[in-house]
Image (cartoon, rainbow, N blue to C red; front, side):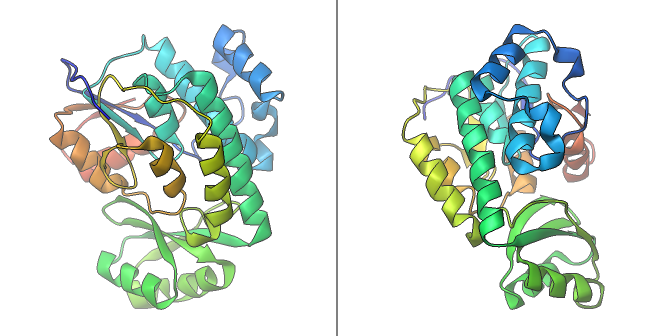
Length: 280
């Protein structure tokens, strides 16, 4: 997709699922955009965060856009998002309308939740250890590297059985501390194929525009070329967040701004670029 470079050194980074908590929307209650979002959704996802993916994803997306809007819609040299955050990044860059993105996110969350219920799976963070040893272990157990978040933080995804085996041998074989993640499925793995098919059908009905600046796919660490195809494929591909941050820096980003709830990505940026400050 063609782009217009902005006269700025800011990169916008939008959070993904997991960046939520009860009351996260309280400061935005009564705002027109939130009222419209609840009308489009036909339900209040903030009241059902405890039910998981199908409600957490639209909730995180809405707060990300509301916070971005409150900040005065800052321009950027480039932007990206951690998985779900890609949708907010595309909205901020003008490539996708808010309501269209909201409907996509709602369908995405529902499709991923349904896929997780149809074929049980989960995810396991591997903290510390040797990256190559973690990758070798994943290969031995037919697990996917779902996230390369930062130095010392890889996330595995796959069947319950295989993840259980990885957790049992993580310290011995990879020198890593295993941390099970509270998710409803094996995201960014082949177990999400039914969800990817559903999302692809929904994407076919959506119009994309030229972005004002590059929006990087976190699965390729490069600007989206065909977001309609890539967003569906990204449900099956690992999140290359470490590489994406490095690519944003290469694109000219000197400051990383994280709109939305939570500061997980800002913490990762500081680990990837130790001298870099990420502004919340």
